[in-house]
Length: 389
Image (cartoon, rainbow, N blue to C red; front, side):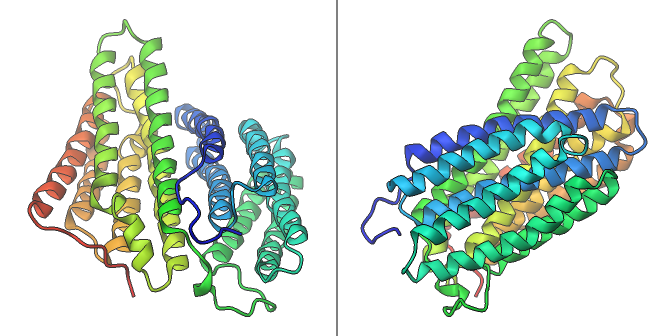
């Protein structure tokens, strides 16, 4: 277990583990790109499947971050768990393009093995410690969700598989939100220890890694279409969008997350809500990366209806997650988030009439408005975190 007075900064092991996230997000964005550009009638179903796979990968990341928040990452036992999880996450990312085909058992089986294997190992090494009961509670929830994961992987019908995997993810999320209650856990969930500075830094690193994947995808697309007319303008807009996403995230709420966790009456509940907010924001960034790639590589100048979902839907999803993040830190939501998301949603019906580049510029302008409003609103007024009671 972590002991008082230990360093609260993220370790090199954390950064090493995050390298897997770069590869995993690139696989997700590539699969979403294939969903959006396909001529199939079930584009929404394909995008929904990709979202399920993304959430599964991100659940592995968050579970690992919570693990190294509770336990000492300098101990060889915990390092072994993290490295083993790293290998499993890589295998999941490699199987992701085939998860709703012949690779379903490889994806789901690895996911279940990561969670159950981690908890079995911890139960063994924590023998005699009070944390063993809590760890066994997490094992119980992992075993419950493992059933629909494996059954769904065996079922050949993709619709049934998707429904069972959605149920499995719902069990995982509910368990995390409730802090994995079990009949043998005596302490209430609010007593789960949280290292505010460490977990805040991990969440910020998680967001920065997602922005890194966005830059990577945009850069590769621009390099492949360097001599196409309009590619440079699209790349500049994509970079401006990346900067705006960073600015909107970090300004005030991102900076003050550690203080919010430290002053929250129930830090465990707050970090789970913040995790949900980051899930939404990163899902939005993945959609934005696909939209940027489409715009940079566009040759027709015509907006496909499916493209609207990523070019405008990505920023909307990001703003929704950012609104939840702001509520987590300040117990309020700025009107600029709601107005920005509403403007983007209102633009969607007419979006098919304008070129993809113009649509991308529209999204960037709306994000710039949100960022500008944030700066003007808080100029000269210090803001202290005030988490929900």
